[in-house]
Image 1 (spheres, rainbow, N blue to C red):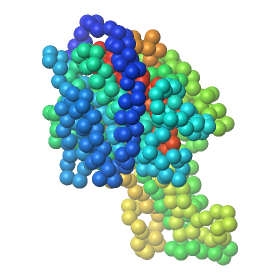
Image 2: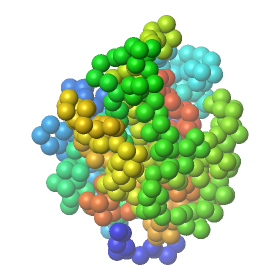
Image 3: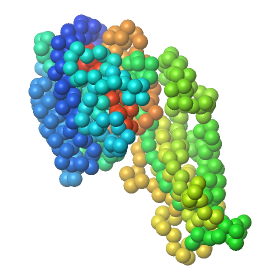
Length: 499
Ligand SMILES: [Zn+2]
């Protein structure tokens, strides 16, 4: 696991509050240009499969970072999207900080958006809360939001970091760490080339800490430092009945119904309260440490607000959400078989399908989960195949299921130790900046490929999210609240000058 090769300096020499004040002064007179730069970046489409526009993003970001005094280089492999790598050494600095951002975004369904996803607009509030269009002109209300794909996930940190560097330079403040930046162009596509890029450029990408700048701030709007993520994996199931649809009157109660078999199989794996019945599923799980439990207990309870906001009558579990997401999860992503409503037919279908997602926690591995899940399916009397069945297989086995696992193989979770010296130092800096209101979150519920970074580079990792929690990431009307952008500039300045 982690090798600690440095010692924490005794006390900071710089007052992070003073740095934040100076950076804020600079920001207040540059808000228009910051917003214009953000809008410019958001207007370049950034779906990972759109390689032409992806390159335009990479070039645009390269120019932005060069303008902020960084030396930039594109790292790419045959067939990969370029990762933007930049560095800015500081004479005499003892440590190197790597900031990770991804500049690609989720695909869009423009029909669901109030405005074009790549023509940024400003609104006074969320579309769902009747936010009105306002001109993208200073003076700005900090509650206003800028809308566009990747406003929250994950282009805001790019503009914030550039602004931080420009503000520090204008104020004559030199960072205390060597800064490196790695901006991935295919994170939302599952980071298919990340491992190979890291392996190829190991020396270049070495740092004392990787700080992932992605994800939302806490739902209470307080800043949070996140120590890990859950891993991700999943599988698809196809259960078989007769080799053609059969009349349910002539054959019902005799021919096996695959929809029935599938729901029974799913019911054998997971309860409605989230508990997974698969033998061995929890075997590798490491419990929370006392300090992780204490940090969760100290964070504000958001469940009531979330229940009302999301129209949920009763959650799956009695535990608060922060505890629930520290557990491994099996999520039913989708189920397909026959038709309903006016299209329903009195037939027994030949097959039914389900897609199931998994979220992993320390120290679960995808390989082990695959093994115990397939064993469980066999224990239910199924013969497992990984391709479409032959006629012979259909008649040979009383119960037949096709199980398909993704080619990329999934990845484990990652969690940094609360008492890691750099984690302690970053949380101290952020607490100083926010009057001791920083929330420490052991894990994000979602997944990021942190494990891959740790595995290849053996570097500790923390996540410092800056987007508003209601940024609609991955959905329609994605947005960033301006105050979050302003805060991000100060947060980065404090980290760059306090480490
Ligand atoms: Zn993201």
